[in-house]
Length: 80
Image (cartoon, rainbow, N blue to C red):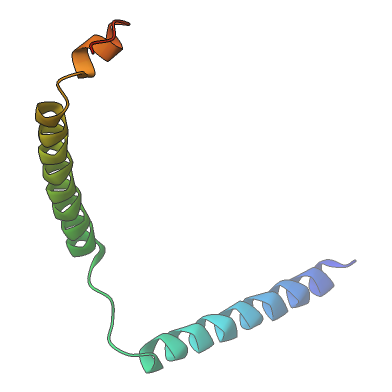
């Protein structure tokens, strides 16, 4: 393959990639409103994870207070 053929092949691939990107951009614009910036989405996820952690800790405290046998079972002893 000559250098000119390689350049022509590369140019054809670049044109195809450019067309694909233009199509993807137009589809994204037509699909509706743009997504929030990544930073805002990450902040929302972190806030949600923090709330979930609080709920899980609260449930763990409730479970510990409701199960008086827990200590004996973990230690291998069984209380009747």
